[in-house]
Amino acid sequence: MSDDPGVVLHALSPRGCLNLRGDLREAGFRNATATATGVELPLEPRTWRFAGDTAVYWLGPDEWLIVVPAGREADLERGLRDTLAGSFSIVDTSGANCFLNLSGPAVGRVLQKSSPYDFHPRNFPAGRCVQTVFAKASALVAGQADGSFDLVVRRSYADYVRLWIEDAAEEYGLARR
Image (cartoon, rainbow, N blue to C red; front, side, top):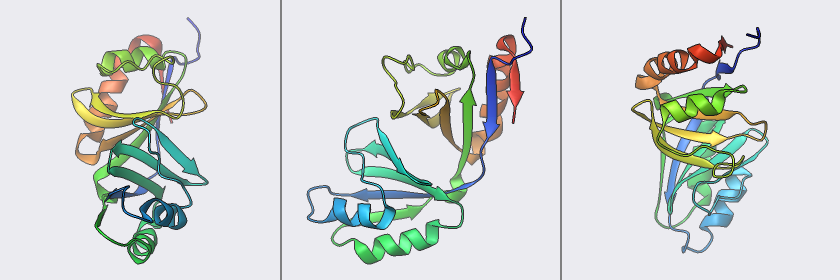
């Protein structure tokens, strides 16, 4: 067996998170959001977009998760509130989430063990995201261009999910970063 790990688990630094809800039919909602975030809202289900260090994940027909570097969420929230008109909701959920990244040649097998969702590359290419059950916890999983997967999990489940991944990846070899 090779010394190269089959799976690499990387705990990512804390991020700022804003949950945004709004009606796409309201004039200016898309443009105002793009102006404030620098990212156009993903409109297709199960997709996400990014520009620089800001990412926007489609959560539902009227709901998105905006992720920015920690410390920038308050300014972005103010900017959104100043820019948006009509009915909308913005909630800072930064303290509720933890971010992990999974990569390696056996990452697909670990995902298969952890979720009922089909993460095969034909079904889940880079640029896709999905809210799903992951190790009996809820998670947002996003496919990255480098073949890795970012996971957004509730902070209260983060240790449990990490231990689950360690157990699920044991047979393939696991490196922690």
